[in-house]
Image 1 (cartoon, rainbow, N blue to C red):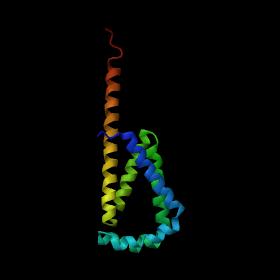
Image 2 (cartoon, one colour):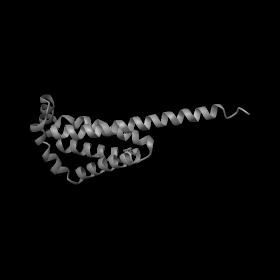
Image 3 (cartoon, rainbow, N blue to C red):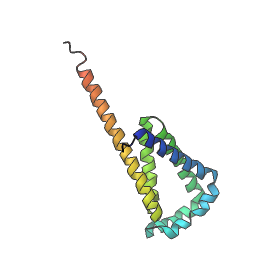
Image 4 (cartoon, helix red, strand yellow):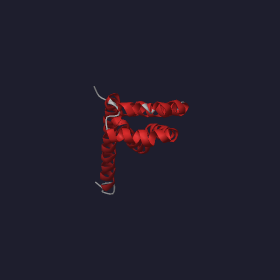
Length: 144
Protein backbone atom coordinates (compact mmCIF):
# COMPACT_ATOMS: atom_id res chain seq x y z
CA UNK A 1 0.00 0.00 0.00
CA UNK A 2 1.41 3.34 -1.05
CA UNK A 3 0.96 6.24 1.35
CA UNK A 4 -0.01 9.51 -0.29
CA UNK A 5 1.94 12.27 1.45
CA UNK A 6 -0.62 14.94 0.57
CA UNK A 7 -3.44 12.95 2.19
CA UNK A 8 -1.37 12.25 5.29
CA UNK A 9 -0.44 15.93 5.52
CA UNK A 10 -4.13 16.86 5.26
CA UNK A 11 -5.09 14.39 8.01
CA UNK A 12 -2.31 15.55 10.35
CA UNK A 13 -2.96 19.24 9.69
CA UNK A 14 -6.68 18.83 10.31
CA UNK A 15 -6.03 16.85 13.49
CA UNK A 16 -3.69 19.48 14.94
CA UNK A 17 -6.00 22.33 13.97
CA UNK A 18 -9.07 20.70 15.54
CA UNK A 19 -7.13 19.66 18.66
CA UNK A 20 -6.09 23.28 19.20
CA UNK A 21 -9.58 24.65 18.53
CA UNK A 22 -11.06 22.12 20.97
CA UNK A 23 -8.66 23.27 23.68
CA UNK A 24 -9.48 26.92 22.95
CA UNK A 25 -13.22 26.23 23.22
CA UNK A 26 -12.90 24.38 26.53
CA UNK A 27 -9.88 26.17 27.98
CA UNK A 28 -10.92 26.03 31.63
CA UNK A 29 -11.95 22.36 31.51
CA UNK A 30 -8.69 21.33 29.85
CA UNK A 31 -6.69 23.34 32.40
CA UNK A 32 -8.54 21.57 35.22
CA UNK A 33 -7.76 18.15 33.67
CA UNK A 34 -3.99 18.73 33.71
CA UNK A 35 -3.66 17.37 37.25
CA UNK A 36 -4.38 13.83 36.00
CA UNK A 37 -1.10 13.86 34.09
CA UNK A 38 0.83 14.11 37.36
CA UNK A 39 -0.47 10.63 38.27
CA UNK A 40 0.15 9.02 34.86
CA UNK A 41 3.48 10.69 34.05
CA UNK A 42 6.30 8.24 33.31
CA UNK A 43 9.15 10.47 34.48
CA UNK A 44 9.26 11.69 38.09
CA UNK A 45 11.06 14.97 37.30
CA UNK A 46 8.46 15.71 34.60
CA UNK A 47 5.64 15.00 37.08
CA UNK A 48 7.31 17.40 39.53
CA UNK A 49 7.54 20.03 36.80
CA UNK A 50 3.86 19.59 35.96
CA UNK A 51 2.73 19.78 39.59
CA UNK A 52 4.92 22.75 40.51
CA UNK A 53 4.95 24.93 37.38
CA UNK A 54 2.34 23.81 34.87
CA UNK A 55 -0.57 23.46 37.31
CA UNK A 56 0.23 26.87 38.83
CA UNK A 57 0.02 28.43 35.37
CA UNK A 58 -2.50 26.03 33.81
CA UNK A 59 -4.65 28.56 31.96
CA UNK A 60 -1.68 30.24 30.28
CA UNK A 61 0.04 26.92 29.46
CA UNK A 62 -3.12 25.44 27.91
CA UNK A 63 -3.69 28.64 25.92
CA UNK A 64 -0.12 28.53 24.56
CA UNK A 65 -0.42 24.83 23.71
CA UNK A 66 -3.76 25.39 21.98
CA UNK A 67 -2.37 28.28 19.93
CA UNK A 68 0.69 26.21 19.00
CA UNK A 69 -1.56 23.33 17.88
CA UNK A 70 -3.74 25.62 15.74
CA UNK A 71 -0.66 27.23 14.18
CA UNK A 72 0.90 23.81 13.52
CA UNK A 73 -2.32 22.63 11.87
CA UNK A 74 -2.63 25.72 9.68
CA UNK A 75 1.03 25.51 8.65
CA UNK A 76 0.78 21.78 7.83
CA UNK A 77 -2.31 22.43 5.71
CA UNK A 78 -0.66 25.40 3.99
CA UNK A 79 2.02 25.34 1.30
CA UNK A 80 4.95 22.95 1.45
CA UNK A 81 7.33 25.56 2.86
CA UNK A 82 5.09 26.24 5.86
CA UNK A 83 4.19 22.56 6.12
CA UNK A 84 7.74 21.68 7.13
CA UNK A 85 7.65 24.29 9.88
CA UNK A 86 4.24 23.05 11.02
CA UNK A 87 5.45 19.44 11.05
CA UNK A 88 8.46 20.47 13.12
CA UNK A 89 6.25 22.34 15.60
CA UNK A 90 3.85 19.39 15.81
CA UNK A 91 6.74 16.99 16.40
CA UNK A 92 8.06 19.20 19.21
CA UNK A 93 4.59 19.21 20.79
CA UNK A 94 4.49 15.41 20.54
CA UNK A 95 7.86 15.17 22.27
CA UNK A 96 6.57 17.39 25.10
CA UNK A 97 3.47 15.18 25.47
CA UNK A 98 5.40 11.90 25.17
CA UNK A 99 6.17 11.22 28.87
CA UNK A 100 2.62 11.91 30.08
CA UNK A 101 1.60 8.24 30.24
CA UNK A 102 1.43 4.96 28.34
CA UNK A 103 -1.46 5.92 25.99
CA UNK A 104 0.34 9.16 25.14
CA UNK A 105 3.57 7.28 24.38
CA UNK A 106 1.82 5.11 21.79
CA UNK A 107 -0.15 7.91 20.10
CA UNK A 108 2.67 10.44 20.15
CA UNK A 109 5.15 7.91 18.78
CA UNK A 110 2.83 7.23 15.83
CA UNK A 111 2.45 10.95 15.18
CA UNK A 112 6.19 11.58 15.49
CA UNK A 113 6.91 8.77 13.01
CA UNK A 114 4.34 10.07 10.51
CA UNK A 115 5.54 13.67 10.82
CA UNK A 116 9.21 12.75 10.49
CA UNK A 117 8.40 10.59 7.45
CA UNK A 118 6.56 13.52 5.85
CA UNK A 119 9.39 15.94 6.62
CA UNK A 120 11.93 13.52 5.13
CA UNK A 121 9.78 12.84 2.06
CA UNK A 122 9.15 16.52 1.37
CA UNK A 123 12.79 17.40 2.03
CA UNK A 124 13.94 14.70 -0.41
CA UNK A 125 11.43 15.87 -3.02
CA UNK A 126 12.55 19.50 -2.69
CA UNK A 127 16.22 18.50 -2.89
CA UNK A 128 15.57 16.40 -6.00
CA UNK A 129 13.45 19.14 -7.60
CA UNK A 130 16.16 21.72 -6.86
CA UNK A 131 18.84 19.47 -8.32
CA UNK A 132 16.82 18.83 -11.49
CA UNK A 133 16.12 22.53 -11.92
CA UNK A 134 19.83 23.38 -11.55
CA UNK A 135 20.75 20.56 -13.94
CA UNK A 136 18.23 21.83 -16.50
CA UNK A 137 19.50 25.42 -16.17
CA UNK A 138 23.09 24.21 -16.54
CA UNK A 139 22.41 23.00 -20.06
CA UNK A 140 19.93 25.71 -21.00
CA UNK A 141 22.50 27.77 -22.92
CA UNK A 142 24.14 24.81 -24.63
CA UNK A 143 23.12 24.53 -28.28
CA UNK A 144 22.92 21.25 -30.13
